Image 1 (cartoon, rainbow, N blue to C red):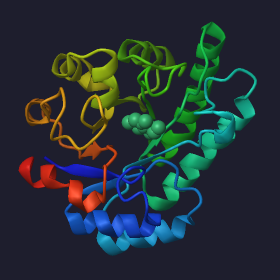
Image 2: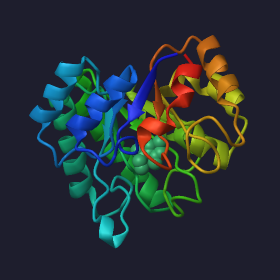
Image 3: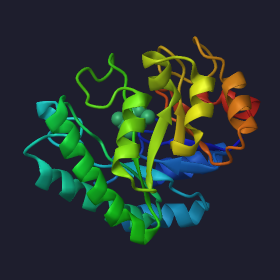
Length: 253
Ligand SMILES: O=C(O)C(=O)[C@H](O)CO
Ligand SMILES: [Mg+2]
């Protein structure tokens, strides 16, 4: 199996270029991030070149975080901000060679939010396609993100089908899907053609994948059996220094 270090959580106490170097030193095959925008893309690219690690993806900005925003793309009346955030993420991703942009929906509900989200996703897919990039949407669980627009894989499937864009894909985060729906391995199998990236963390505490209610030894074996070759995203919150949390990495290789 190949693994990608999610630098939104792993080595999050270090500047992003140093976190990339730490991930390379620890033996990861790739990295991914959340919101890299405060760091000039050239510095991120230099660290990627130095280590040889690819950056898989990044997120659109959340908006006004202090006011509690968690994405803009499904918010009626915020289309201009949402599209600016999408264009920003695509441009930054292009500069650092990241092929996937996770477009964050935000806190919203109802048919108007769905129509706005779909229109913004179509814009994102059209803007990303000429650069060979894909757009991801990710259902988040109701405990961590109550009120988030996108919460289930069924809802994501409906949006992907309605958008009709081949570069719109599902971010299947095993942590969120287990909390909302369970039945991880059947869902991975059924949704495989729609999946653009897979992430994981222990459930329910979002720690390293070596404890909790999900056996990742089994889940990873199933993912491998499905022919999935891309690195799996380690998006968990270490309880201490990240380097002390990595016992799982060697055991799952
Ligand atoms: O929360 C997650 O699981 C994510 O992957 C988002 O990108 C960050 O909120
Ligand atoms: Mg995730």
